[in-house]
Structure formats: structure tokens, C-alpha cells
Image (cartoon, rainbow, N blue to C red; front, side, top):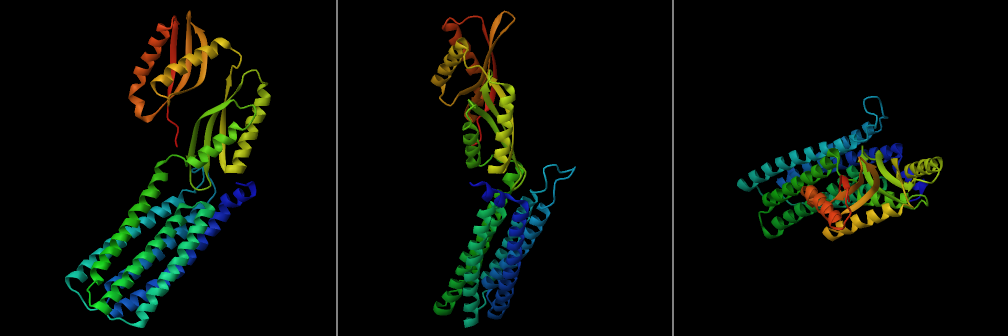
Amino acid sequence: MEQNEHSKYEDPKKRAEIGKMSGLIGIACNFLLAGSKIAVGNFAGSTSIVADGLNNMSDAASSAVTLIGFKLAEKPADREHPYGHARFEYLASLVVSAMILVIGLELAQKSVEKIKNPIPVEFSCVTLAVLVFSILMKSGMAVFNSRMGKKIQSTTLIATAADSRNDVVTTTAVLLATLAEHFFGWKADGPMGILVSLFVLYSGVTLAKETISPLLGEGADAKIRTELMNYVKEHPLVLGCHDLMVHDYGPGKCYASIHVEMDKDVDPMKCHDVIDHIERECLEKFGTNLVIHYDPVSTNDLELEEMREFVEQVLVKRDERLLVHDFRMREKEGKTELMFDLVLPDTMQEEKENIRKMLEESLESAGKQNITLNITFDPEPEM
């Protein structure tokens, strides 16, 4: 991603402008659709059309919440919220999902009543025109919100786009029910209303899951992790990197930390300059506030390399996912202490003591006596 594209893409003001514009367009379009469908549905006696109109009314309210959410997310950081207020966008999505669920339950209730007490649906060209117009308008809104959501990486707008696509499906279903009753006499209005309500409920549950996950602190996107790791490794003085942790405080508010290995014999001031450069570049290129921990490593200690190679070979035989980093060796109380971090997959978290015992027995069997282990078990990196 180019630097100028990224700054435009992550700029809070630009995000807010696009988000608020989408909210205003959504409010206007959904109010228009809701009013026309409710009026036509009541005139024709169609519960499914009225239900679809109420769904559009909930979409208008959702767009209003989106508008407010983007507005609140603009607020700068303060003493109580040093990382800013960008998570208001997630909260807006959560409110939208709750509203969708309530509307879905109401639609289901009305549809059940229509099945129990069916009323003939009056067909007219106006009814047909309103439904077709709705399908076309919602298709346009889905494309618009999808493009804008991808442009600024907004889960709220992407969810809004998905909701618009759902509306295309549900309105098409309502249209089919109306045509089925008019031409074939099938009483499909009530059952179709049930299907519409189930579709709305499914959308609400899906949106709630997608919104709650980042609020709880989900793992970082695999793409940004790969980009950060690859960029850091590109620098000539960097021998390796590990322990990347990424924290999401809302769109455009990404913070991360990583350990970087460099030769201990290189001038520390030079290493410091390189680290500063990497941190600034990551902010500009990836919109990530990166903090780097400097790990000096020895590159010309043959005994250390021999011990590391031995330990790695033992671990690979057990499981090739077992990775070692920060490998050091020192004399302590008349013994040689091996200190290292061991990346342990989630499925092996209960095997720490077994792995430690296996290493100790392997060292003893190889005649490497008087050695103690100081192992730090790290969780498997987020993918």
C-alpha cells in the first residue's frame, strides 16, 4: 500500500466524512422506502410488504446510529481515553444489531398472525413499482456501502452493505409472494413474512457477533501481521523478530509491539536509530503505532550455537511447531543455565512439564551434564 493512499485511507476526518455521508444517504433512502412500502402494504393488505417497510424503517434508524457513531468516533484522545474514541464505531454497530433483532421479532409475530388470519392481498401496478424500485435502490446502496467500507476498512459500512444485500433478497421474496397470490391464488404472504423475519434475525445475530468480537479484543488480522513481520525483517540489521502483539482500539487506532533481534556487537546507537526508523515507517505505511523491544544476540559464540541447535533438534522431533527464540547461556551457581523462549501451540499448553522433562533427559543422555533450563513458554502467535 502506498503511503499517500494509506494516510487518506486511515485519516480519522476522512473516515468520519465517508461514514457520516453514508449515514445521511441511508436515512433518506430508507425513510423513502419505508414510507412507500408501509402505505402500499396497508392499502393492499399485505403483511409481508408492511414487514419489509418496517425493516426499512429499522434500517433508517440504523443509519442514524451509524451517523452518530462516526461523529462520536471523531473525538480526539483525552485523559480518560488516551487511545481515542474510535471504538464508538463498534458500539454503533452493536446498537444497530440490537435494533435489527427487535424488528425481526416483531415481523415474526405479525407474520404468524397473518398465517392464522389470512387476508387477501390487493395487487396493483403501484405495489409492483414500489417493490421493484426498492430492489434497485437497495442494490445501489449495497454497492455504495461496500465500496466505501472497503475503502476505509469500516466494519460498520461493510455490515450496512450486507444488510442492504439482505434487503434485496427479502424484498424480492415479498415480490414473489405478491405475484404468487395474484396469479396462482397461493396464500404466501404470511409464510413469506416469516422467512423475511428469519432473514432479518440472522443478519442481526451475525452483525452482533462481528461487532462484539473486536470489542472483546480479537486477534489481529493475519494480513496486517504478515505485512508488519515482513517489513521489519527486511532491514539488514534485523536478524529475526518475534512476539508480535497487535491491539485494536478502533478503526485507525492500531498499536503493536514486537521483539527484534540484532547483533550485540553492532553499535547500540546505530541499532537505536534503525529501530526508530522502523517505528516511524510502520506508522506511515501501515497506520500502526509500533513499539520495538531490542534483543541483542550473539552471532559468533560457537558453544551457544551448538547448544541451540541441539535443543531445536530435540524439539522438532517432538513437534515441528515448537519454535525457540531469545536463546542465551550463562554460568550460574557453578552450572550452565540455558535461557530461551519456547513457542507452544494452543493444543500443547498442558504439556509444558513433559517438554521440559524431555529436554532435560535428552541433554543428560547426550552427556551434556551440569545444565539447567530456564524456559519461558509463549503462546502461539495470532494468525
